[in-house]
Image (cartoon, rainbow, N blue to C red; front, side, top):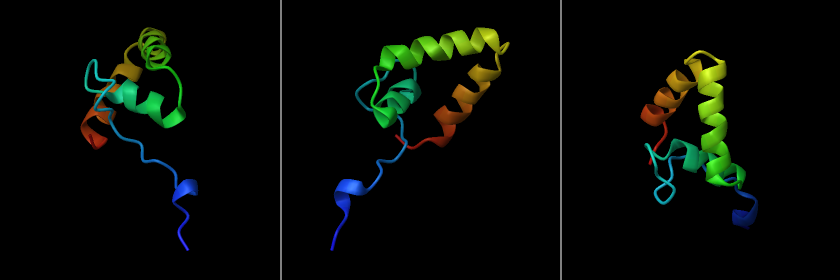
Length: 66
């Protein structure tokens, strides 16, 4: 018995929605939302958090598989 339909997809950088590393595109594909919304949220979060969100983005860029 296989349960491939219920298997969650892995969180990874996007190969098609790449703008700067594919992190926002990968998050958008994982949650099935528009990549531009995730990108806008990342930019807003970077300003609101004083750059901490940008550091998280860079960490995800290095840690997530492509």
